[in-house]
Structure formats: C-alpha cells, structure tokens
Image (cartoon, rainbow, N blue to C red; front, top):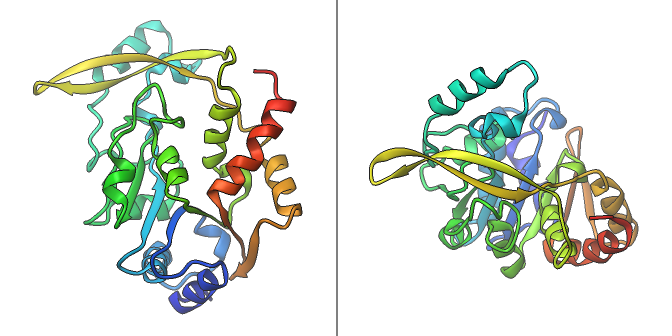
Length: 260
C-alpha cells in the first residue's frame, strides 16, 4: 500500500523539493494500491513542491479535434460534417482531458489550476509560475516555441515520469520541433470550435505531424548516460531529470537519425 508519506519521501529522493517546477506524467495504476487514489498523488505532489513551487501536467482533449484529423474509418464524410458542426467550444474549465489518466484529470480540476488555451493539446498548471506557463499556446504550435513546453524549458523545469516510460514524455516533442527547424516537415490540417464575440466559430490551422517512435530509445540513451534519478514507489518505477538536459540531449540525436 502506498501512502501520501511514501510518495512525498519518494519525490524527495527524486530531487523534488519546495520551490520546484515540475512537468509530471503519471500513471495511477502503476503504483499498485494507493490509499486515496489520485487525490493522494496530487496532494503528495503539492506537498513536495510547497507553496512556492509549480506543477504542470498535460491536459489534452482529443475529443475536440477535427474528425478529418482523427480519421475514424467508421465515420463517412456526412457523419464527419455532422460531428464537426456539433463539437462544443473548448472551455478551459469544463472540457475534460482524454487519455491523460485520472491524476491529470483531477489535477486540472484543482481550484487554483490554470489551463493553456490550445483546444486539443493544453497543459494544466498550478503554483507560482502557472499563469506565465499557460498564458500563450498557439493552435499551430502545440509543442513548439509558442507552447508551455518552451516556457518550461526557459524556466529550467524538472521532468517527472511516475510509472510511465519515455514514450509518454511530451517534452521530447519540443526537441522534435527544434531538431526539425529549417527542414521541410509533413503537416496536417486540424480545427476546433472557438468562441468569437460570444458566438461559436470553426477555426482551422496546419500543424506538423509528430512522431514519438524514437522517444524510448532516446530516453534509454539519456538514462544510460547517468542523467536520470530513479526510485521505486510502490510498484512504480519513477524517474526525475532536467527537462533542459533531456531536450538538449535529444535534439542532435533527432537531427542525425531522423528523416523529416
């Protein structure tokens, strides 16, 4: 059984202390039995960083994507048009996350949490730097220089992988953006319902196609280089590292090994 105290002690071993700024990816089920479930994990994270720290988590909402982008073969052109016309406007408080897990969903519901304005790839944050991190998030830059990931890099955040692997590490998408700078990339059209002067409107944009196929290999190499702290909390293997160091490590690997 994992308690809040177990989690706080484990986070301290991962160099998370009062005042820390952390980007968190976490799986509740990976820990095994947690007394109090996701509430306990969120409380432990907040206790670990204290009142002057900041916690950030992905809060993506895939259900609001353009149905052509999702490309569900079960939906024909007419059905996709009907879905597109019926999708609700993204609401930073109301729109739920999808595939982010129970910890992230509870975290974005915290009374003091803020959420970035991207209708599909938002991040939630709470703490001292939350407003600055979530202030700007351009639709065509879900993981680039106009995203919360770039602000986290600028602020020298730590990255926590709690019971998940590097394949879930969104920070590596920032490395992907920087590795591809100046190169031709495949793009895809996407869209979302937005509010314009109190009315619903449909906005479209083009965004780069992302690829996480090499994330685990990059993470393994980074860990083998001795740049990652690891502890076990309950049944979960938990990792902590510098987000800046990981991104800087990944960029040259992607430049040399990928064909953008």
